[in-house]
Amino acid sequence: MDNRAIGIMDSGIGGLTVAEVLHEKYPQESIIFIGDTARNPYGNRTQKEIISFSEEMKTFLLEKQVKMIILACNTITFTVPKRYYEENIPVIGMSLDAPCPEKARTVAILATPATIDSHRHKRRLQAVGGDRNLLEVPLPDLAGAIERGMDPSELALLAEKEISAYGAIHADAALLACTHYPLALNVLKKVMPETTFINPAEVTVDVAMKRLKSCHQLSEVPGKNIFYFTKTTDISKHLVKNMFGDNAHIETISLIGE
Ligand code: DGL
Image (cartoon, rainbow, N blue to C red; front, side):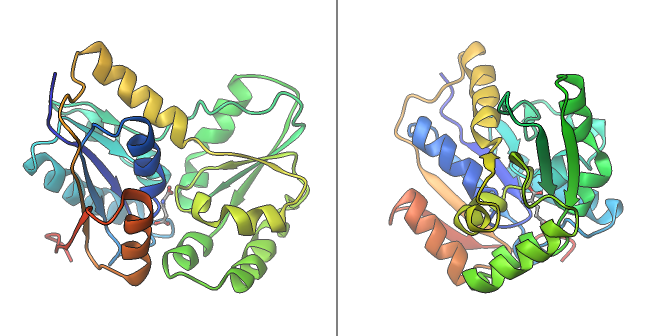
């Protein structure tokens, strides 16, 4: 038994989509979430900036004495160096193992430019085999627009423009390799009506919880959830309330380098 909280971090509100899955499946686990909403988006930033901001968030969570950190952000997961994961507690990144529908011949990998530059999703899909056409689709503006709460019709125009530039509108499947994108799933479904969407959040949570279970570190007291943002916006408040209820505590904080 280990009643300490699980730390979850993202560049902004996207990581809430992973925290929500954790909360639904394991409500007894406490969550300490940090979203760097003031400096979002990370996906167009330099590697140096992404690493330094992520270090600040990790330090923040370690000081909160969490038992594990989940990087609920593909951009962070696939940009930070290996040593970032070397801590006294497990640091778990976004999973590459979300199952892809067998029949899908064309698969679009939707992600931020930084994640696409790592080519990790493409390599993983190539490694698991199958005769597939893999389209890497960097979306420079989508995560930021979701973070700002862009109106759905404008968001649809933006998504269509950015996705069609890579010929991916008719893909059989699309991997949501940015945790912000599930927040715009309804818009994406309209833009890509023939596509099956794959969200790696569930697999990521399963990997994390398997690890805690195997070390007998599940919580046995009712979970309490705290959400820290570097800028608390209406949309962040609205999402936290919707996903975690009225009792979830929200605080605005400042990180060292801001
Ligand atoms: N939510 C993030 C991800 O999964 C990043 C969005 C951003 O800050 O650009 O990649």
